[in-house]
Amino acid sequence: MPLYKEQGIILRTMRLGESDRIVTVFTQGSGKVRAVAKGVRKTKSKFGGRLEPFTHVDLLLYRGRELDIVTQCETLTSFRGIREDYVRFAAGEAILEATDRVAEERERNVRQFMLLLGALRALSHGQEPASVVDAYLLRMASIAGFRPHLRACASCGRPGPHARFSVAQGGLVCSSCRNATAVRVGEATVPYLAHLLEQEWTVDASDDARREASGLVRAYVEYHFDRPLRAWAHVPR
Image: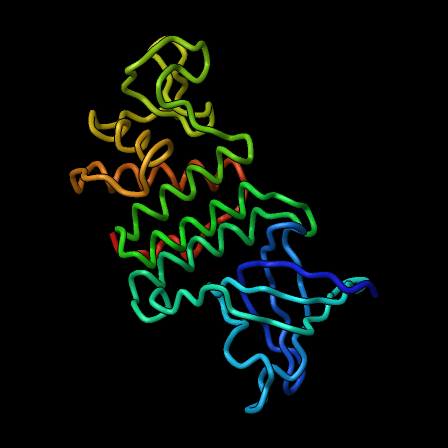
């Protein structure tokens, strides 16, 4: 079992036996990795509380056939503030769940890793949690090849603005191309979505625009990745 070093973000943990845990880590160089942390639940564990969700860590691991083994762990950023605030915690849980569901095991994706790290930093610095979640999901979809069309018709390419959005067709659609699934969107919703996708993590917008945008983002991501996002519903909006 070769020894290797990685930095990563803990996505989730699961108990194993009386004192061990299986940790799922999204790493910068090796993609998603599942590893055993031996004795981590003991009072005198050498890992302490470092192998907890949200924590950005520097790891030394042995590569195994199915599960790797964590031998050393140092905290780079704890993101403790996310865990100590319910709203930020709920938003962070939605982000970690989405990452876990989309990331492939042992498939390197540096852009996705840096996006995740940036989202956690935005949450920890007090930016509006629901907007950070929606921005993250939009950008995650874009990296995966499902970038929503927000400036031109997703079907024919006719420049916008257009008043209808189709999850199945991939974004805004003109009156000629829209199908039965296309829904009318508010005038302020599309600029808000475009800002989250292309610029800052948060931006001022009306409550109606935020709620409508959030619903579209969830529907879009769940449709194109064919996976439900359970934690999304717990993010206060």
